[in-house]
Image (spheres, rainbow over the protein chains, first blue to last red):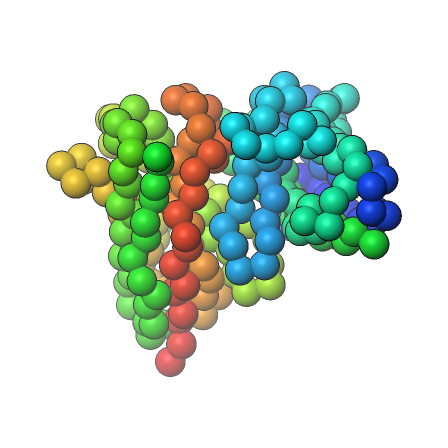
Length: 108
Length: 121
């Protein structure tokens, strides 16, 4: 079982805002990183550290954190945002890394 | 531009070993850690371990501690992942990835295309 908990599935209407959450004790200490993965493709980093985006990632993807919960918010979801989203962070025990189980986002 | 190109798919029998390569280009190889992540069919991402391309230091997931060997060849800017004593539940797509920034163990900014390893008798 994953030490980071994500909702298995979330849906959002086209153009609306959606929040994907990730819960775990390690998030009280470390920031989460977020990845988007489309079927048959490698994951893509979309947000990391304290709400930072790699080059080329649209600014509709934003990250936040409070207590033991990290969130990825997609403002104005587009059809191309339909994908699985994974969070990860450093495990509280050391230099290990843990992933959440993933959230499948459907854009209606 | 940064590129990570992995070796091709493999089919192995239970108990065998597999070695996957990850050839990098477009950056100074020794300046960034390489991580390995796997994904079983229809499942989520699983962090396997990381290696410092500078020092060769490694850290493996506890579940793979005794079976996983991570190495690098700085002369060819290539990272390798060897998994021993393969079992059927090791069937997965294996990814190498480069950390986005030196010392950031969790933000994997560049990924290989993935290598499917199938373990079957």
